[in-house]
Image (cartoon, rainbow, N blue to C red; front, top):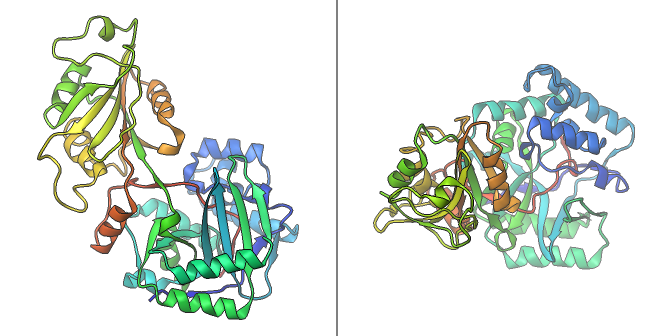
Length: 424
């Protein structure tokens, strides 16, 4: 049974919430974070990723966390953050392109995380977990909610709908990316009790995003952690694509021949890449080049953007019959791509730490894959577009007590940081 409770929160001044709210720290590189903070000086990102303000320091230097704590304290003194006097629940709605997802902002018992009521689907990296531990300890607060989901419950949906119907939002703004963020305070004691009781009947919560934040909260000894609980029927998972620097010393003909052992390889439908050597004089047995990007439409399909010097092309890869394992983890498309191609052919042995691999959320489009490959420092590179993982696949892996490969899911829209702070 899920142990959720109302909590005493720090909220931003509603007139400043749009300036404060920031995308999660881990979607930015250090350089990107510095640019974002320069453009938005009040952004919570300067507290969430303070290393961007200390370019001469190591990213995990103790000075980084000291600065974060000083900035948060200064914001509180300046009235940017205000302490709520009583424990409350909050509803947080994100609206994008007319589609809404609404979650309950709460605290969840860390014992639920340890016992498996809160289930995870990805492993954590020691360095990233340590980073969030130091951040919590320095601030004496949790500032990044863990994004949880659960099998939708009609009674919880009804309680949220009633609160939204009966009250105006406390905070309401549209972010630069077009996502509307609305927050309601649930301070009615009867409605609070109804939510507590309703979630007590939920047997399992699943981490959608925030594995490191949940692990850090448990590691520092907190009895509870900050979370947003979204019903599963409202969530959307995008593809999480891969970019590889170099081709492991292979030329394009050899790589395509090796890929063809496990995948059917065909050019993406479109105009040949006019003027490139491969388009005019393709090597024997090599599929013709194409400039048409390919977005997979079903499981077992992959788009491949391949660059070799001045030559580039898009291909469609389809897993050959009998090559998909009948297993909850190894049967995932992300696993198949790694086990049949990235590992054996491109020698990406550890996708969590190999510097040659990077990840791009599908929300950024196939053009971003092309841009990143074309911007690689070497003469060769590849990008792989995947079909999105489903929530049913995520639930099946988590329920079996197993883990997905890293970077298997990309949820969008993403809750903003800096809107809810849980002081310890």
